[in-house]
Length: 130
Length: 260
Image (cartoon, rainbow over all chains, first blue to last red):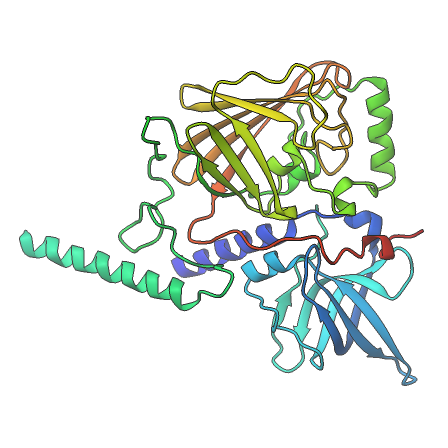
């Protein structure tokens, strides 16, 4: 019981640590009324401040492939939450939850990433909620 | 009795060794986890954050350490707790514009650093290094820093506007009271865009109430922008057994993403 509490406290600590580093206004860039869920293959990961960006090829039902760019929090929050620059690599298949960019381009902000190979859910340190 | 003490000491030593191995074992190139020397520890090796605050050789409270703000709400809105903030008309109009355009012109979005109050409330760690004459804050975010003179000097009379202003601190009992003036008008008090004028005088009060806890109070005194001074209080938590990480604004795609 005590362990469980400690784990919960630890998670809350980590979430608080990674969500609140405001670089830009979330609302200026993304629309929290437009959730998006994508499954595809990672083509590139940019592991850098102020935000990690990753790109994935998403195939629609007709077979057409579209490349999407997704923003996460910064590497420092992700490192403190247990990620490394190798947690997600080009070629990995992932499912991403997030929100679309207001511009309407194929861009978004990721709130969670699930690795298809392991089912592991990687918190994305979204820049939302600032 | 002797045997019991020995057993307890061995337990403490074992726990400390386990903690050390755990910390060192996961250490990586960026020193994300490493034991901070000089931290009081519990019998199981964890930092004792409730221990008394440390003091410097001259008996002053030592505020040194790596600190984090546990909530992002004051960064977004310094007045989040509902303090009465009465703005002068121009300030109210500017604040409303910033709210209506979702704070798209926030300085940090252009990779400019935060400033005094929005770094006090920022979740990214700051490291305090206290010496007898100056207290230095190293901000992980934006690879930035701030100096607070505690050598008795006076504030400048005609300050050239500065992103972090000019800060002098003095001790009132165990509280470090910091006066800051000369803040550049381009800076925002928080991420929602509370504005200020060139008359801004920030009064910060820092009191280390325990080894792992800092009480922080900010007063905004800016008669050109606000009808009366307003004050907010919150806390910082010590981040033991870690180190600041690199943070340079090298991958900013904000202007590629926002609607034109």
